[in-house]
Image (cartoon, rainbow, N blue to C red; front, side):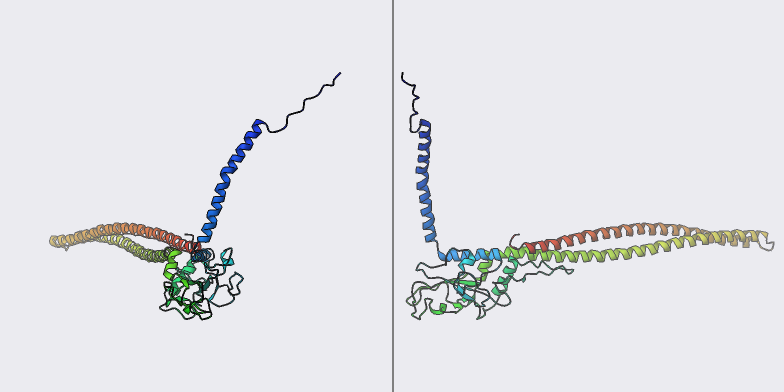
Length: 383
């Protein structure tokens, strides 16, 4: 009797597995050529990118991030050497975040020079931007892009550049990138030609044409151009405008303080006038009462006098009546004066209250203006 045999499972891919595999192969077939093309494009772009553009962009990025320019690389390790006071060296590519030294099409490194004047050293973050604010409210001691912008403005305003600072064609510049070209064109034993040789800082003009004895290329933005590229005018204008607003707000508040004092004086005058009017009213009542009593007593005396004639009695009576009438009119006048003084006092009190309220508002506006000016100074680039 034959034993029952379990049929073996058939090997190979199922239809579903085959479909998935084919789909993956198709996806790879479409994706790989595109990736290869993109990588080739990136490589060609990197190779064709102008090193002058790369160098300047790296320097601007460093300035925005650090609020200063890097020091030159003196020892050739790619890092800036700030302890060395020299203005010229190699571009510190490692400090700038570049993967390799900045070289020209012939494989030679660029030289880099930067302004390091004592009063406005572009490689040091100094607190040189400090708009004056009233009431001993100094702007923030934070050192940021506004201070760098101010240093650029100070150096850029110089009539002639110091001999110790970089210049191009006789005009001071914040930094310079110097491409040595391909050969020692002027045959002076240095790849850098003419005024670009050695440790010199008075570089040849950026637009100098290449010739038999010159094949360098100098790239150096002016102070005005660099200020514009960093958007310094807008940032400095915002901070300076806020400081001016704070000073104007202080003047307005001081005027409000004087106005309140003026209204305080007016209130005291009106209070004195009211007291005077009250006194006049009391005196008028007193005089009127005394004269009325006197007239009554006089009339009684005249009536009892046997020696007085009718005409004399009439004259005395008329005079007494006139005096009493005058006293009564004085009382009316005193009442009017008292009422007017009371109205004037109420008005002066309201004016004083309004002046005090206005002083409070102007003080609040001044404090807000100072806070805004300080905040803008603290933010620096980030307005």
